[in-house]
Image (cartoon, rainbow, N blue to C red; front, side, top):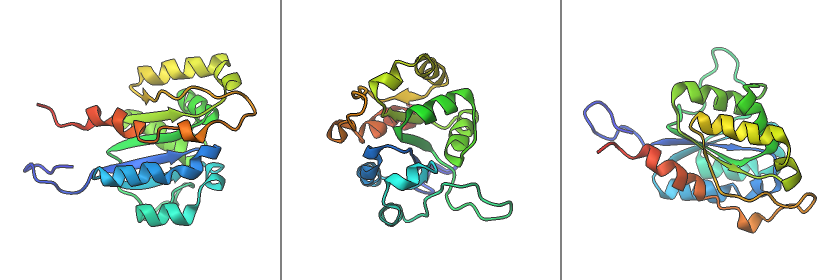
Amino acid sequence: MKDRTGRRSRKPFLYVVVCAAGVAADVGQLITSAKAEGWDVGAVATPQGLGFIDTAAVEELTGYPIRSAWRSPGDPRPLPPPDAIAVAPATFNTINKWAAGISDTLAVGILCEAYGLGVPIAALPYLNSAQAAHPAYGESLRRLRGMGVLFGSHIPHPPQSGGAPAGFRWEEALELLAPALRPPG
């Protein structure tokens, strides 16, 4: 991030929003890649997503506490404002609530607010093909794409298969965000 004089004032800050899916256990791959590319990173987990990650390891990697619940008025903000957001893994539930504007968790609330703030967002869906067949999912993707959300290329896995964590491309979130964060010119 540059200040008014064009000097770097701080590293760009990436929020990684983690949802409840088995592949979430590997979110450290995205955090490590982002840090290697010069990002500072903070994690925001859905309440259910907390059960899928090693919170101590993620906090050690980021250097920040994981956010999952609203803070009380007057409490300090534990993370700086984001320059970009990666939603990985983005579950069926989170995608549909986000598209509908249902801000019932901190994670979805941050995503809903980010649109109005113009924060670039990349989402890496992770769901099964039966969920992807539901009409609400396609409508949600259309709405979010219309809002400028960039989506990864993950193909839904068969129901009750547990998915294919090896095929989940964590780095795709950074690839999607790169053009949105390049300086003009």
